[in-house]
Length: 231
Length: 231
DNA sequence: GTCTATAGTGCGATAGAC
DNA sequence: GTCTATCGCACTATAGAC
Image 1 (cartoon, each protein chain N blue to C red):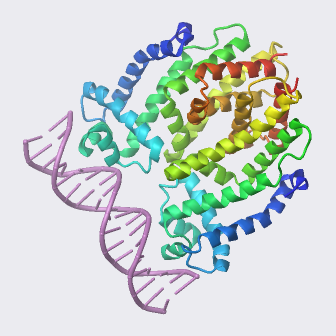
Image 2 (cartoon, protein in one colour):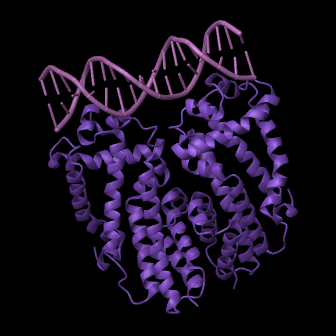
Image 3 (cartoon, each protein chain N blue to C red):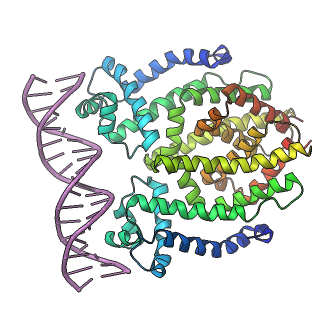
């Protein structure tokens, strides 16, 4: 992943494929004691399982989704599912771990490549929008189903939430410091950026009904920040 | 409810009490065929049941909450619960209907009392913030547990979501029309206001950890809108 | 590696005593 | 109006054949 990757959503998707494969393999190796089939078979079937967990989980809720539902939707038997995951909860944990790994890896690949804080801010926003577009089912799932995780995992999830907000916060602070941004509460503007990004994946129906594309939305955020942040 | 009521959160809470009683009674009368006890007894026990549904539902999810959990938390027997609601789903519907009725009633009580679109906008924001502060458990519940409603109720819930956004949208449009607001996409600014209001009740822990009060948050939104909307 | 059959548990809901 | 006891069902998870 590099600056070329964010030239368009399609390019971004393309560049993600390799990362996805790597992370899936790492996940399988990490859970090797629980997965009872070969890496090759797991690599083939886990994506289908993950997709199904997210689809069913987002439409009826994870706890209302039974393994029978998942079995039917994936055309796998109940027994077969238990060779890929040791329990229903384990399935949830793997789905989470897989997506978190990809997303964190993706953020780390970029950093702050520009001199101008404003450009760095716009870049992070674009990356976040692209990621939430591609992994929208997981973003939505993670938001609404956190409560089914253990306390430790809930803490972790809140921490990761704050970490990404902190990322925006730092960029904005650097802009205030070098006086390219207007003096203001960077806590609030970072939270605002986060909540705008969130709205995009929490209420996709709203924007698609209005015919607003990802690029439109990105541009509106840019207009807003130009007026709000720049002197 | 009148303009005096929004002078402070405490005043607002005080003025809500009467409305709450009225709406609870209306709800009981509407569900009379399903409720097997007198209005007086229902009036006394339903609030506790509702509160418990929201508490447990928000911490473990509604579908993972059993009637046995609710029974234990309210010190009522399983049988007793079934004299107040005819099923677990009915409990969910009543909690929703009750809160929706209060909130809609509250909005209708205000309208657009000022000449200036900006003042009207600030007023609606304040009302929304106050309501979401007081009924935070329900706002959070409604957001994360919509999926357990029937398709008809889900449609209704999205419609109500859009309706409240439309309310902001109309005020902003009137401001653009009378040139007191800058020319811009009112779709986006209305969505932005909504998503900021949402962040407040979806992530209370974030703001309380930072020591940001409701009034602070309200002021920051005002500052943002001053820069973004006014010429 | 995948299947079917089933053990064991906890659920929503009801019946009937008080 | 509230309770306890219990029915029937659907769930997670496993065992053992192929």
